[in-house]
Image (tube, rainbow, N blue to C red; front, top):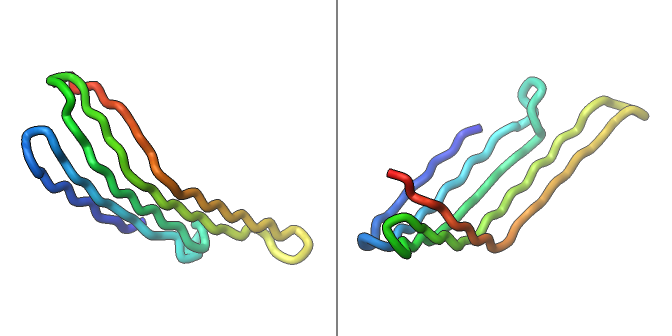
Length: 89
């Protein structure tokens, strides 16, 4: 997997983040293709509480075996997400 992530601090209470990775390419025993893309907005609500809302797109494609024993696995997941984090430091 090869990826990158960037965070942009807008203010003391707002953080934007974007990240992604891609890999597999059928090398060795890996997936045929896999990628993940995430975008998020984080808002610091208090000293200890952070709320993040964003979007994620994930795809995984793999083929195992051959002939009659071939098994093809394909996973796609995408859509909005929301999360809560507790800041302990």
